[in-house]
Length: 242
Image (cartoon, rainbow, N blue to C red; front, top):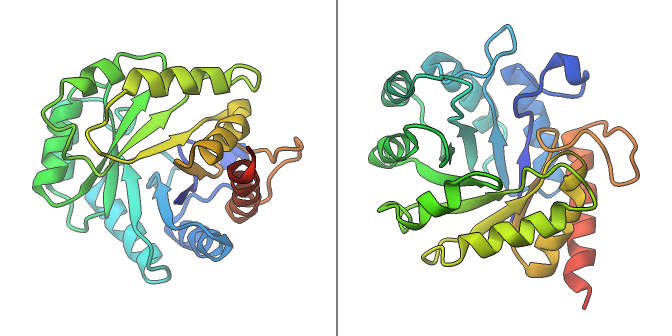
């Protein structure tokens, strides 16, 4: 499985290629799926370009994408989109259009309550376990650990020369994930080394403008689809390596 992460917290300041509006996100999703992505992750945006959990914005965005692609579509529930845990829960409980899955960052306050609210609504939960946090230890004792859709092993080390080691340490910290599949990915300069590691280990991964703006050769990526094409090539080559 290769998930495309269309935008993340990036916006217009990061370049014209970062999709922000529902229409642009739908266009990017179509192109990325055509390039080989089998799952979509995105951050719905307000008209001003800020991440939001607004039921109205979520509905418009999901409807625009689902009208054009048939793969699962997921969204963030990151605390930066709604810092107050109680307000975050209220947003989720009032969603009128539901994503197929949503990521929950396990180190954030209220993570288990958010995950429970999503599960109660029939939304799959991607448990976001960030390196450099207490998330792995918290997840290990969570009563929800066997109920999540998958574990997102998120390597926050942005350096190309150390990201793989950080990824291996995170996977070691995760240990037993109670049979839940792992999606391993990195960010910034660590994106490509971690993606190749995922290929060697046969783990699901993701690629897109949320994680990196650059191709492996250092050139600026022109689209999510271009990143997916290159990501699949790198993943498959690593998977074939001894």
